[in-house]
Image (cartoon, rainbow, N blue to C red; front, side, top):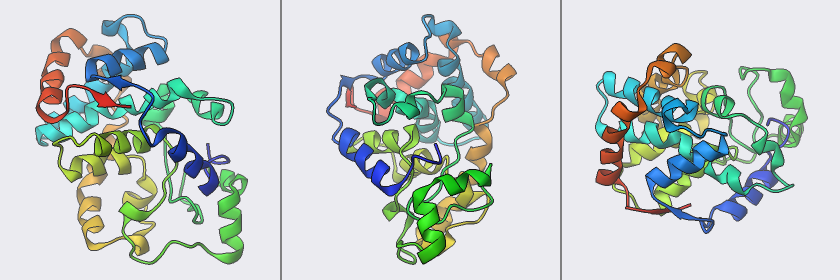
Length: 246
């Protein structure tokens, strides 16, 4: 992914998917769509559904509010855009659900990629990174992380879905989705120079969520979908429209 996620590529993906005109689905329909995407035919045995429930349950167990539990539960639904990939972005379709959900680490696009990121030797494959090594980046100091460009990922897509569909989720829930993978910021202390004051408040609490992404697979496999899923469907009814544009 490091090679392809440049400013030009991300902008092309925003143009392709950002208007959310590909489908209209409820959350249960979106769950079924993601199952089909990952090749799962039985909900009770689906890794992605179990993972959604396991991570949301971890947030619930930590005492976080129900809106954050829901945000973490629906996070995997950001993979839906992969149903509509083409030759220009087929490389994104080749990434597994497990990699997207548990191993995806992002950075601020158009800037030098930090050496603290996993496998920093791959940074040299990114054209933006190479250009910034020579002439510096263009992101304004203290512009606020709402205004920076991040790689096009399921998290970034879902953030747009939740924002455009005018849910009743608080802004913090949308921040949790968007910044979940930006551990180069909240764990490794990069990009503080781009932060607005409110971003530093976000950084304090979002760090705990990053650890939840790697919930042990044994815990995931023990999840009973039939027992756990109805609670999160109720939360979806509380905070989200009956159907959403995707």
